[in-house]
Amino acid sequence: MHFTVLSALPLPQDTSTAMNAVPVDDVVSFVAGKLLLENVANKKPVKMPEVDSAMIDSSRWECLVECMVDSLLAPYNENNTDIAHMEFDDHTDEGHTAYEQSGVDCVKTPDGRIIPCHNYEFGRRYELYDGKVYRRRFGPLHHRKQTKKSKRYLALPDYPFRKLFPTAEVFMTEYWGCVAGGEAGHYGYYFNPNGQWDWWQIGGRWPFRFLVRDDCPLAVVGEPSHLFEEPPKCNAPAGYRWVAGARKCDVAWDVMREYVRSQYIEQFRRYEEWFNTGAIPQEYASGLRVAEDGIVSYGDYLYHKGENLEHYLANLGLTDQNPYPIRTCAYVDADGWRDNGWMTSDLTEGERQAWHKEVSDFIAKQPDDALLVSVDCHT
Image (cartoon, rainbow, N blue to C red; front, side, top):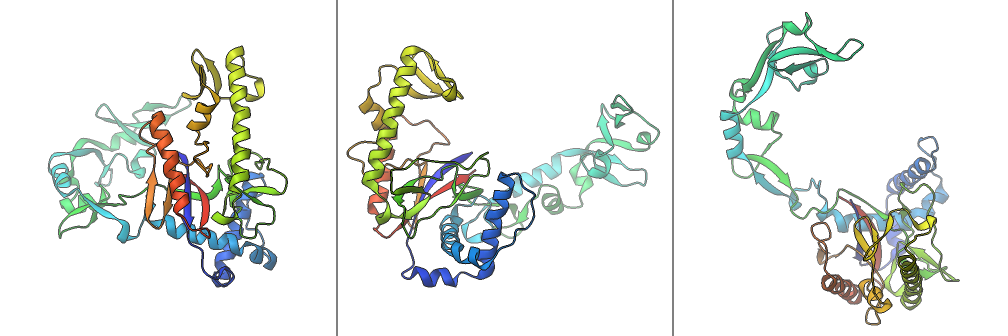
């Protein structure tokens, strides 16, 4: 699943010095990675692109921002390897019980070894079925069949773990995948209790989040998702452009709010017309349908029967009381991570509007020179 996260970062006092301090090798890797993704998206041959000095100089700012975002998001990595962010989940008692009472289907090989049936050595050609060993996918019909070679294996269904492994500790580390941790003699798994994502990118599926002037010097372009068949486009008022990140003071909030509001008003009018006529134009029909009580997209209501414009805009956070027209599933800064629980439950109307206010308050508390960056996270 992909979800959008609003991150807020303090900028270095001297951004030029900070950019120049980023190691050249890091900038080269950053640029090469982006070029490789562009080649994949454009279906070009995947090979290591050449990176020249001009590319390095023009990419230092984006690379610095990427490093800052990486540091901010590190504590929420589901696959974190930093022990400072990990907790130990003890499975010692379960492991001992499984070792003493359970087993796994095994075979005795022609040379006298006992191995589990899922081992590649055995499983790539043979299978244990109904207590006998068969050659899998045999002959032109690819059916199972007992052959001379398969009969040389002795079936050992539900072979006890205590016979297969010399000790419970060997069983837990070599078969269960546990590691030693916690108190002496204990085994289990390390995990990040605050894990939220397994990979991310700036922009991604949401590359157009902030409206800034065309000449904004510290805008963050990010990169669109490589899943887009064509580079996405987004219209902007004359003299402005959409970006994935910018300083709070550089975002044209008033212009952005009015522009976004006008776009959603048009959208509301379309939904209203489609519902009244019972027909959705072909160019908009993908994923949408007219239901008895509204317009639905993949189970979610985009428009409810009888809904008025004010109510529609309020559910999107576009009210006069909200100066920041940003919709996000989570936000994060140095004070921590907060999300709206979208992955575990549907929000009620009241919860949705409370969340819009919470996001607005989060942005309001940031200093004017804070860097706001939209991140596409995956879990």
